[in-house]
Amino acid sequence: MKLERQKLIKKIITDDEISTQEMLQKRLKIHGLNVTQATISRDIKEMSLVKTLGINGQYKYGIP
Image (cartoon, rainbow, N blue to C red; front, side, top):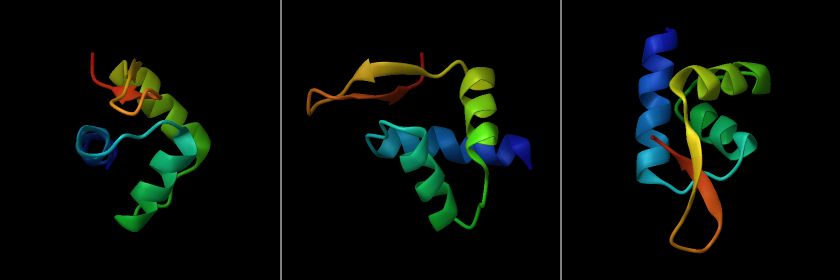
């Protein structure tokens, strides 16, 4: 389950400019995954995601 969720997170942050954990949580819910903010926080840490400057000048999650 965790690997599938993290794979989906990679797809979401690659396809869209996700700037907050709340935005990511909402996108996961759209895909049928109800997860807590703590779970998202752990996934971000485990995946070593970083904040990068997006096209619109705001920071977004990215893959290093």
